[in-house]
Length: 166
Image (cartoon, rainbow, N blue to C red; front, side, top):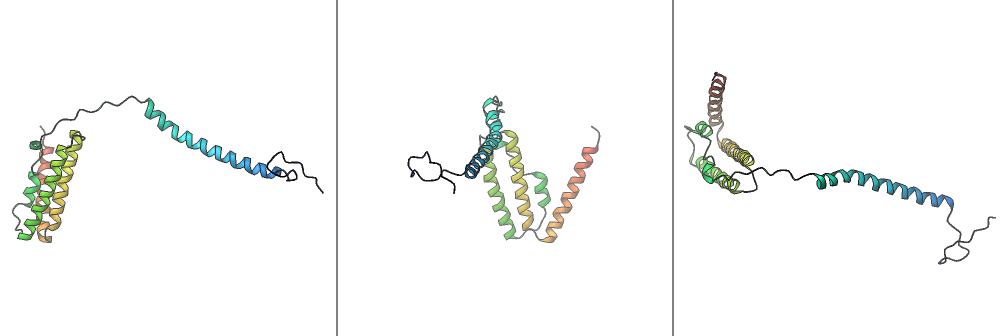
């Protein structure tokens, strides 16, 4: 029989066996794995933190104050595509509701001081396209066909104008 070594731990009985060598290795292996994981995490997080601290503040682009009057009222080419359609009263009401909603959104974008002029222009164009798409969905198939034909004709004219030498 093996004789147990006395455990230096004072809280245990003097005859409590000391931890086996294999158990200490498991604890050490776990500690090493934890240290490696923590180190890896810090290595991944550190570059972002150092970049955030050491990079000089980027110049803030000067935002141009855009007055509500500069907001495009309606895209004339798009409204021309809808012109001449025989809309029902219900279609007219829904299209007006869509346009009113988009006007409110566009006014909010124009008044937003956090956006620069490029962002405002992009959002205004996006809202205009969204309004046109929603209005297009309300049309009957034959009306949609007419609008597509008008849009194709308009694009063809635009392409011809761009192709002409200046």
